[in-house]
Each structure stands twice: as C-alpha cells, then as structure tokens.
Amino acid sequence: MRQTFYPASGPQTTNLADILERVPDKGIVIVGDIKIDLLGIELLTIRIRLFVASVDTAKKAGIDWWETDPALSSRASRRALQDENRALRERLETLESKTEDESPQQRPK
Image 1 (tube, one colour):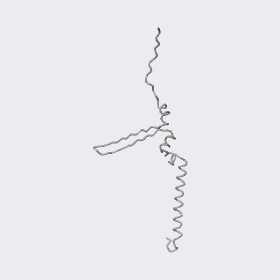
Image 2: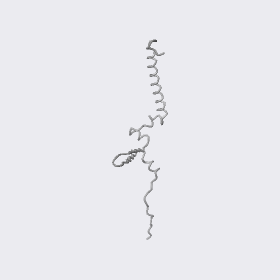
Image 3: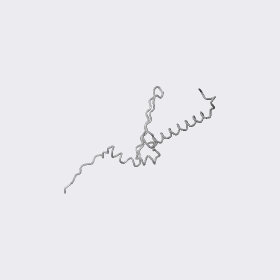
C-alpha cells in the first residue's frame, strides 16, 4: 500500500489589495485617539477617524462630503461661487437703495 503525503498548508496570507476588495461592500471604521498629558494637563489631543467603504456604502451611511466640498467638487465650487455672487448682488442693491434714499443734503461731499 502506497501512502501519499501532501505538503502541509501554512497560514494563508492576505495582502492589502485583497482586503480592500472585500471591505467596500460593508465598510470598516478605524478609530484612534492620541492624547498627550503633562502633569495632568492635557497638551494635545488628536482624534483619527477612518472609514473605508465604497461610494455607495458611504452614501448609505450618510457620508457624502466630497459632493459638497468646493475643493473636491466642481459642482460644489460653482454653487459656492453662485452663492457668493448672489450675496454680493444683494449687498450692492441694499447699498444702492440706501444711497438713492438719501437726500442731496445728507450725502457726504
């Protein structure tokens, strides 16, 4: 009788790419705090929050800041510029109406 020996399989290794392929469907949250105290006095606190997920998963979680940040979205940038223009026009109209309401004696020379 002949015996067949198979090599023992070691632990499976997973690289970062494999993990990132699996994680976006459900998402993963990594939270960390770094606090530096000296003699009971808090000098520095750094809070780190990392949420790794697909865009769809993030939107389901209510996270969509990249759509409203003018630095990241051209649509948001245009919207911010339009809002600023609208506010400036309203301010200009207010100033012009105040100037028109003043009588010639009240106007500064």
